[in-house]
Length: 126
Image (cartoon, rainbow, N blue to C red; front, side, top):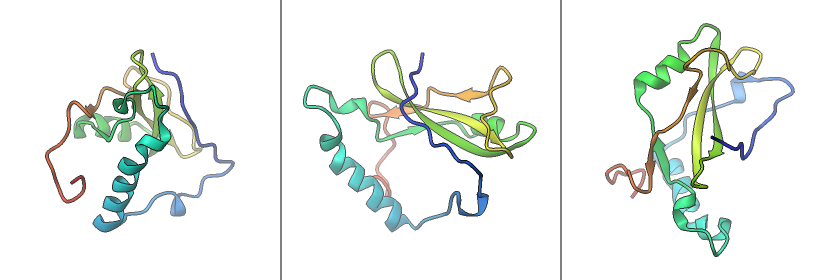
C-alpha cells in the first residue's frame, strides 16, 4: 500500500516546457546535491535508507505504460511502502494531463531500489 507523498497539479499542460534533456555534468551535480542534502531532509531518528538514491525499472514495463492508447507522458509519484521507505510509482498520463488509472497494469512499482540494490559506479552516480 502506498501513501502519496506529493503531487504536482497543472491547470493546463504545456508539453514544450515539461521536460528537457540535461548534460551529464548537470545530472551529476543534482545527484550529488541530493546525496549531500539527505541528512538535512531526514529527521535524526530516521534511517538514511528511507530516501532512495535511485530505482531501476525494466524497459519492457516502462514501455508498457507508455504504449497505452492515449498515453503521452509518464508521471512519477513519490509513495511510501509499509516499511516507511519512499518508493517511486510510475503511471501513464494522457493528453489532458490525467493519470491513466484504468487497466490491470496501469501502475509500475517495485523498481530495484538503491540503497540495497544499487547500480555499479558510473560517471553519473560516483
